[in-house]
Length: 224
Image 1 (tube, rainbow, N blue to C red):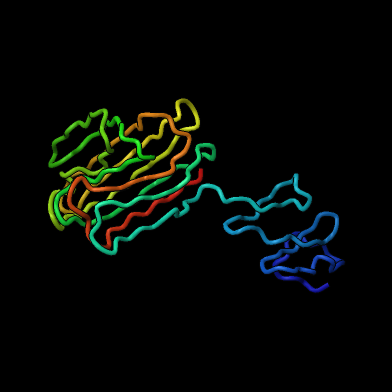
Image 2: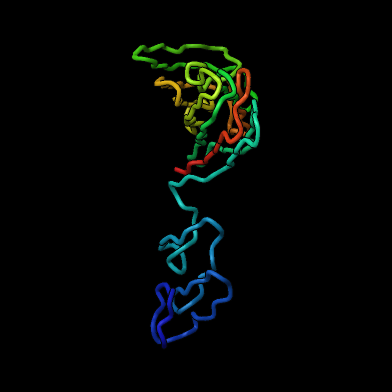
């Protein structure tokens, strides 16, 4: 039998595994040559001895998936991500942003419309450190006015949002931010007060004023 390009564990001496029917099908073998149907989008072929053909299609582990990418087409003061992030799949959400400001403002976040947060952190500016400690806040401040200090100033940062499987199911938020117009850097850890088994909404907003057109906010889901 002629060699078939793209075959997987195809035994010699027969051609019964050549009857592929769909784009992406592969040749396989168990006790005879046979077809391995193409898998679903974003799955990978994985070895599994318990399967009849010794392989299976499965979700790829340890990857970043884009949930939504938002680029402002004009000045904005708020943007909402509507999502469904379960707590039982060992994943978390990461928001990556870079923005320009029309004037000084604090960048804020709300999770699941909750208006009660406790935060601790640190702001380092010009060699001086300011400890952040607050409770009962209506929003999480993920970048302060020290970072976004004036019009045309820029800021960038990341925010990790997750609900732990173990212990109390309270969403946790870890953020870091810096800006082009300042040497300051800010780290904040926030607790969402109130139990939640999933994250369904993330709102990013300004305390006042607006961010500029072409400011970018990308939400990723990290599969662990």
